[in-house]
Amino acid sequence: MPDFLEINEVPVNDLRSILEDAKRVKLERNGKSRGVLDVGTPLSDFVVALIFEKQSTRTRLSFDVGVRQMGGQSIVLASTDLQRSRGESAKDTALMLSRYVDLIMIRTFADRVIREMVEHASVPVINGLTDYSHPCQIMADVMTFEEKAGPIKGKTVAWVGTGNNVCNSFLHAAGQFGFNFVFCGPEGFDPDQREVFFATSMGSEVIIDRNPVNCVKNADMIVTDAWISMHEEVDPVYKQKLKAFQVNKELLSFAKPDVVFMHCLPAHREEEVTSEVLDGPNSVVLDEAENRLHVQKSIMKWCLGLI
Image (tube, rainbow, N blue to C red; front, side):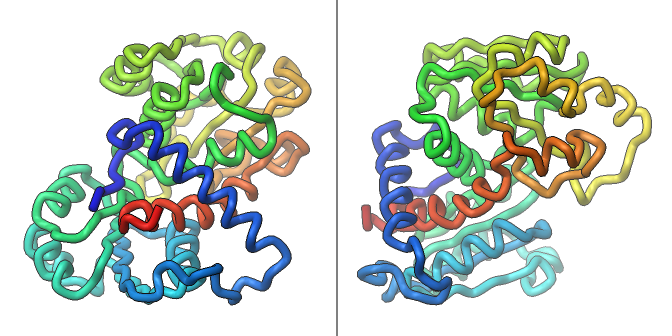
């Protein structure tokens, strides 16, 4: 059964199947209370390990609730719950977990940790986030955009800020789903060139523009993310370089009136984005957060051969 590690490693037809299944299940749940089980309880015979070596709100809630709604059993494990915090290898953890559970989701720091787990696990592994990528989030973002604005193919996504893990996964999605990507940030903060190459090799246009106004003018979606991760030290010099790339009402005034604004959350209000934008009419951040639940259910089913 397949792992879900990176958007650019999953066949496009399978990505589309995941999204279509997520849309269907979301519609089926419309009006139901959160504790009602999904039709057919597809995970009724499965146990899922959810490992959080990084702190989490949305990833933890969406995966845990998703497993429960599908009738499965979840085991939520923080880094301090595991012997990995005392030096056990990812290899030994994967080998052991494979004897207890049917599926592993891990949110961790280094990409090599998840690769090592995949190498030694005999059950599927899902990338819940690493310092290099955040594929589940971007699958939810594509779903959200298409709910609000129709097919994403041929559209333009403007990223304002720093080329981080979320940005890498957006570039993977650009190549797979056929949208164009404009990056706007200061020099030295550009996205990984390997991911830029992937997107362009798949036929997507990738532009790097240092002018935020130019960046957003023709965008169908504007995206930003925290300049500094919640677990990192605040660097005043780093933040000063990014100050001109804040998404605020003035910048939004240069974009299309119906532009969609996204942020994966958590946000540092009044830093990378103002509250006026985050809470404004163009923002779909809560829809993004909800759609994490629906799309991750479908990712889990795909990994287990259920769609």
